[in-house]
Length: 288
Image (cartoon, rainbow, N blue to C red):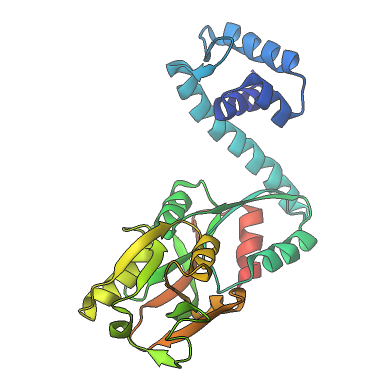
């Protein structure tokens, strides 16, 4: 059994296609199929159920893929560790970000990281704070930028560094009646239609709790998963939104107004405190 065979199996499992897996692995499909068939004969089990139109992972295949991912990660860490011992950082860096990250300029940060460590392969994932924290705890992400309510501490099972504190502002179209105000209260927004994140997500919860504490009932008619889509809908006059004050520089043609009793948010960097990879440690140090 070879590591390359494991890579082929994982690629097929993730793409559900021998053709797409071969493209990902930069190999001709016949060679990939041959190696997987050879591995199946060696193991004495069928890893994939195949037909002319679809590929499904068998129960044995699911078990093998889980162990193969761990083996590939261990092999990559071994290579990265050996390189780090010689002063070179390489390997993989997986970073998660919330849609409204504002404490850092992530592209600029990655540009500086890339300049220092050009042999590190970087992947980015955008998701809600709770999902990103869970992925850090599982080891699926090396680090994540999250936003939490002021009263909510970071998960105890991860290392965390506070990056910024902020109060959300009301984001309005230029022609909105409240756009000329310097500040408003939540009660002033009671009759407005809101565009917000999905109910139950951390990005939504901080606003819901603030309105509840103020005794104000609001109407969220549009739920979205991305801040840029929220911005576009506000620009079209479909509703207003609450976004971090540091995010307003990204909102051309819109107006942001301070909300005196609006929700607070704290942005954190999360990472696994247990033996981070050389690439992860270099990234954490750079953020610091």
